[in-house]
Image 1 (cartoon, rainbow, N blue to C red):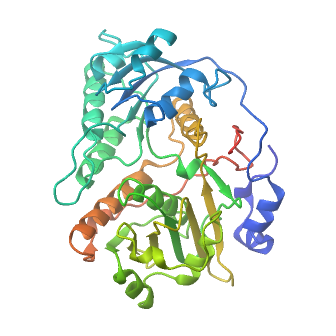
Image 2: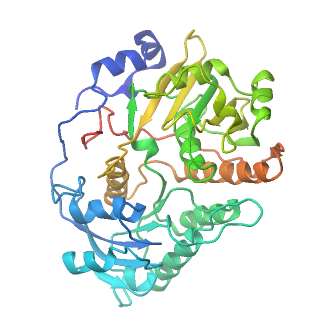
Length: 427
């Protein structure tokens, strides 16, 4: 599909102006459809909390059932053979879809994977623990989705069958760091590919921006919006999928602090986040006012201040009332102006950015290798857990020795990357 961006060295990219040059050469949001050649459909099981219209189960599993556009057209070369739903609320779609598509409605996670036998009957398992009626932790207000329980039951079936297959975990691994650590360690010990995270890192970027490997990042800031946990994860993940490409790869985080209200301004004055980078990122957000700081006083706005083990200081700013997308700005050594881009999502049906998540899992199943490292999601899960603890402790700075997570980034292509084999409209 033409030349690879990642084959260019850092000097070439900086000479080219990186985002401007690449953004001009490649359309940011193509309206043409493009698919890889059809292959044998592989059987998969899905384990979900709920299956309602536009729930994560619907916009992920629905693309296996009804195509990437959920219109009966071309979709992944996967076949849903079974579905386990933890809850069946009003508006449930799973029973109707089972009648329509002929997949098995399992009464347990084990049954979903084995189809009621003693053998593995699927090539992969999707675990989607998002939405549904689940409690919050009383102190930190973290949503207690049963992702660890789903994982443990999947693993128990693997052990019973004596066979493993790739697993996908939607969004962060758990509301607790310790759960996430155990999940990743278990996957490594049992030697099965474990893919995790949300659709934001694989969504469209406008302008098209991929930082070169081993670039020297002096500062970075990501703007996010929405719930400080539920959407805070998306902003942290958008941040991490970019800064992990810095020199030496990811080395982890030594401290996390989450501040609100006037403490946000004080943190900026203390140099803990950059108003210059904030302005650069804000310019990439369609329709966002450029000269307002009223978001700071919103009671659901916050700044997440990160100190990395390699000395980098970066920030994720939840600018509620101002932003409706995620955007990042990065200051590279030797470059006067920051590089910036927006993570573009399709904010309406069929929520096409989720198609790229399904696409990544299909390739993980077929290759036996994760499309991108689960350590990214492990680290972002841990950062988010510390963020919520810091917020509950009135913005206290928390040391995080447990977040010494090290890994190298992958070159898995996002939606409008020139090497992507899936092309869908973003509007």
